[in-house]
Image 1: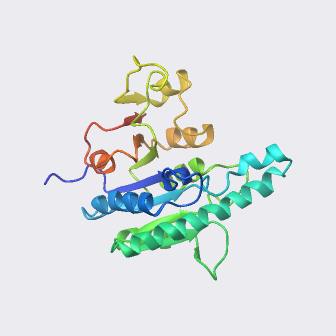
Image 2: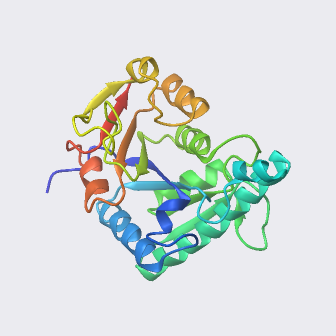
Length: 238
């Protein structure tokens, strides 16, 4: 079998990916499917870091619509990511994967704090590291956390798992003539105002020359094909 193109990756999962067809919460079948996709990559010896969102439990920015203080809402969102990270870690354990959760917020009775050197050592030992609580600061999204952690651990690529199998010239749900970009530069994405990640995360990846691949986590085998370097999703490069 060919060797993987990437040896260390940072996978960004949205909290909504864990919902499946449910209105909120964690769907056991969906999380099991995601873990199966991750296991197929881990079995090849690829080192995997994961940043997970919390939108299935609590979307911080939505709290401002009801008068909640934005910083308070964002901290609640960080706690939601911790719950998702623990659920994902447990699902990985049941699948025979060795995972560790590190949190940007200190709650050591539950999970260990984020320590860069320890995270890198875990990766080198073949453990999957799940980074919870975003950056630990309000006003920053988990997209930014993915760009930050990916840069810190020396990942070769950030993989943005979405509901759509790449970046299109237009909304494929509204425009049947929309075409998927196989590759696009950061500058082209900026000029086209393409929402790959939020602006802060996008700028960080560009400045660190850290490529991004946008793909569908709901497409069986897509994660593995991206890691193997096949034409899957959209590659955003310098």
